[in-house]
Structure formats: structure tokens, C-alpha cells
Image (cartoon, rainbow, N blue to C red; front, side, top):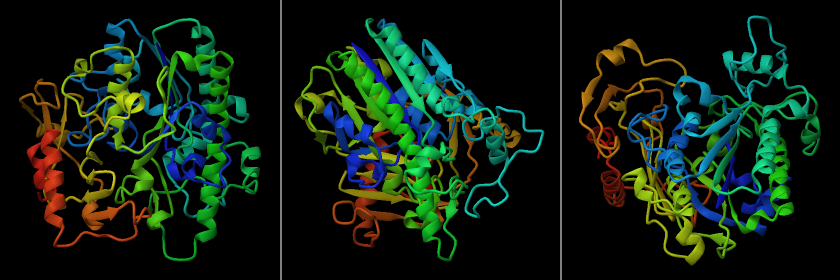
Length: 487
């Protein structure tokens, strides 16, 4: 058994032809349907980037106890379990958060890893000299240190073959060439693209009629300001599509190799992402801060299982936390090796069409906590005044440590389901999101897929809050999460 995971960051479902898009040029994503099952009701769990990756390793929801942070000393990683069963794992990525404070324990769980520098605000090229930042950048584009860093990083990525995303896939092909005749391995080829900034060679921008000067290619997170920004948002969507077309070309190289070497007969393929992106939908740009609309959490997912029926599509509800147990199941490992988890293997769905999960949770720590049954989505905002906490033995943020005040208030608490029975620190959280400003939401996805009509009212509220409370209890949510949500 061998397995390949091709993971993209910020791959938005509505931009793929597999899910009905008619204008984005992505023929290789379309090719996936020749061998893979398309999942139509697949949801993320914890947002954004690194919280989602913790779920990939552990099969357990991150957002109920922890914000952005490393794999914990008490976590069980699927990579460690695979190793104990003789399966070699290798990571190839240009996702720079892996070598920052808040992500520095993930890549080390693999037997080996290769990384390529220079994406987004990766603190890569020295920035103590002026950067060549266009003076006429769009007013809706991001500003700040990361932008300055990005334009310094660009000086090392002038040619397509020098771009870190392209190098990641080339390295992935090299791994496949070296391992196509070997058995018992897993490789994760992980591309930061099409995450913003949408930096891509002009030939891909030409596909969508974009000018040589940059338009809305790095949207700043927030509400779209008042005024007529329709043309600007259309340009932003085209900039994203241009980068997605480069991603599609990279994906095609992996599919070509699998075709040429008849790997479909004995190699699993997973194509996935962590979350989506808002490009003006619901009057929002970015992610994290608004309600967790479907564009952010209803994800594209594709799976090929060698020797299985691999139906064209699956409509049952599934989640990111299901990927880790699926990998273990594929390699014949006991899923109990991960402990008491929230995920379940997807193989029975693909092989026999068995029933999927009845519900899934998703959210952002200290912000929205959400429940879906695949038909309805219930988004519960915080009250704005109840405290919340970080449960950790690794008190770091994306960059930097927890504040001195947070550390002074930390105290050791007994182990729980979340920490696999190991005591950990309980530390006051610091709120950066204010979900209470948007309020609670309930949407019916079948009748209102664009989520335009909030159905929540006094008559149905208690029913949905009870469903959420029960799901939180099953997931071992801490007591203060119920208080924070007013449950």
C-alpha cells in the first residue's frame, strides 16, 4: 500500500469545475473524476491553516480547546502510528508556517521532509532595504510587514521554475520517481497556493484577461467598504483563478505520473484543502473574522482507494477529522492507536456506501462554534463577555510566545479526552475575533445554498442549541465553551 496526499491551501470549492464552475480553467482537477470519488458534503473542522493541520495529524477537533498552535506533547500523530507499522512518511511543502513558532512540531513528525521558502510573508529574504512595492496597489489590498516581506521574497522567484509552489511539485515528482517501485510509504505534497497573495506568471493571468499591473491580488481581511467595488471583486476572483490554474497544472503532473506508471492499482490518492476564502461573498474579504459561511468550510475533497469501487460522488457528510483514521485504515493500522478521536474512516463509504456521520462541528477558537447535519448549518457566536482558555503545553502563537500576563495566570489542570489523559496548562485566551457582532445564524443548504436567509428564530433556537450542546458534550468541550456560547 502507498498513499499520496496533494494538499492545497485555501482551495475554494466554488472555483472548481467539479463543483459546477464554468469559467475557471482547471482541466486537471476535472480529470480527478476519472479515478477519484468526489465528496459533495465535506466540511473543515478547525480554521485556519495550522489548526486544520492539527486535525490532519490527530483526527480530533482543535478549535474547542486551542487556537493556532503546534502539535502538543500529548498529541498522537498519525505519522507516528504509521511509522510504528513500518510505513515511511515524507512531507514536501512550501507552507512557511511549519517553521514558525506555532507550527514547528508538525513537519518533524514525518520520517523526513523538504521545504521551500518564500511564500506570502515568510521571513525569508532580508527586508532591511526598500522593497519594490507598486505604488498604485489597490486600496482593498493588504498592507503591512508581510506585504513588504513578500515583495522582498519575490526577488528570488522571478521565473516560474523558481516559485516555491512549482518547486514543491517538482520535488514531489522526484519522490514518486524514486519510490514508484517501493511499498509502504506515504507522501504529503503540500502547496501553499492558491493562498493569497495571488502571485502568478502573467501567462496565467492572460487566461482571464488581467492586465500586467496587479489588481486585487492580496485582499485585506474585512468587510467590503461601501461603494461600487463590483469590477474590483471580479478582478480579485480572476487573480485567484489565475493562481488556481497554475495549481491545476502542477496537479496534472502528479496525475500524469500516476497514469504513466499505472499507480492507480496500488496507490491511494487524496486531494484536499484546509479552508476556502471569501472574495466579496456576503460582503466579506478573507477568512477568520466573519461567520463561517460555506465558502470557507464546505470544502472540495477527492479520494481514490485502490481496489475499491470509487463511486463518482458521495453525498454523505464528512470532515477533515476523518482523514487521519482513513489513512490508518488504508494501511491496516488500528484507528484506536490515535486514542479517543472525533474522526471516522472514509473507506467504508467508498467501498460499500455505508452511512456517514450524522453531524460535524467546525469553528475558530474563541469565535464561532458551528454544527451541521449536512442539510442545515447552525453558527453559534460567542457572547462577547465570557472568558475562554487555551489548553496547551506549548504556549506559543503563530509567531512569538504567549504574553507574560497570560503565563502568570496559567495553571496545571488534570488530563482530559482532549489531552489524552495528560495534565496540561489552562491559560486565558486573548480575543481577536468578535463573533457577537455578527450574531447567531441558521441556514438551509438545500433551499438556500448561498446562505442569504437566516432562519434562526425564537421557535427553533432551542432545538439547534440542544443539538450543538450534545455534539459539544460528545467532543469533550470544556465547560467554559458552553458558558462562552451562552448554552
